[in-house]
Image 1 (cartoon, rainbow, N blue to C red):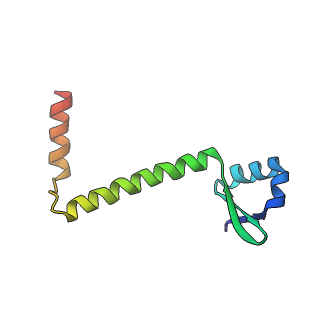
Image 2: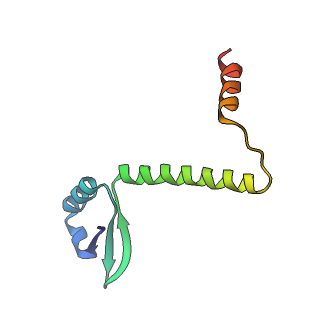
Image 3: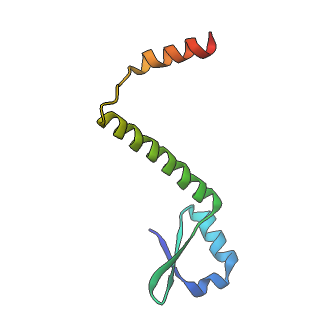
Amino acid sequence: MPQIRPITDLRNTSEISDLCHARREPVFITKNGYGDLVVMSIETYEELLETLSVDQAITEAEAEFSAGGELHDARTALSSLRRKHFG
């Protein structure tokens, strides 16, 4: 379950930092009862970016295939790459 904290809790930066690192998920900060900020550890942010990058690559591949792209057998493609790069 996501952590939701009021903006006044940001006064205690160590507690928020510990919470972000311990739970490995974003902490949502509210201001006047409405969502305002998201705070997360660098590790969580980097994992999020990596996931986004993979998702974008998959989306691009699906779009390419939908536009008439050609499918290749994985074993054949990997064998070809091995021959090309490893002799």
